[in-house]
Length: 215
Image (cartoon, rainbow, N blue to C red):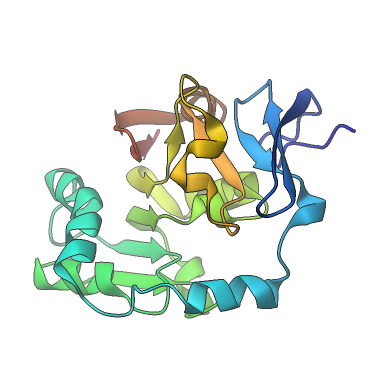
């Protein structure tokens, strides 16, 4: 069986792995390099929301703040305090916005499809958008990236964190696959494909942090 890649829409993919723990199949797109879960095996929205409710990110802890600083510190070198920003997919506790506010960024809005359906925030253009550990959960990541690019001003920044799979590592041993709400897995090739096909400049790429700039 061949499935359409939820990022690039290509049918040029093949079965990559089967995960017994969650009874789900992974497919490897040969066009954009993304590995994705069979869309027929996804959790329901109610099941997904229950998983998110269990995440312990509703309390500001030093560990979680350090985790978010991975996005914030590079962003501060690129955008001044007067910049207008959006945290897309902020979760139940807007900690990233809280930290940015304390650091002098007072014009940052938030949106989350489950916890903050602030649709007015999707009618504004931004100097920067943060997307922390979100894109791996989205059913149609290509549509999300298209939407986020449209919200960016020219020369604006998309700061995105997600696990990036290295093909010299055993996929099913990778901790990132041990979360059944993770359904998209980017590779280095995927990042390059996004930059090329969404006409974005790749400003920075670390092991799990990517910064794009809109041309």
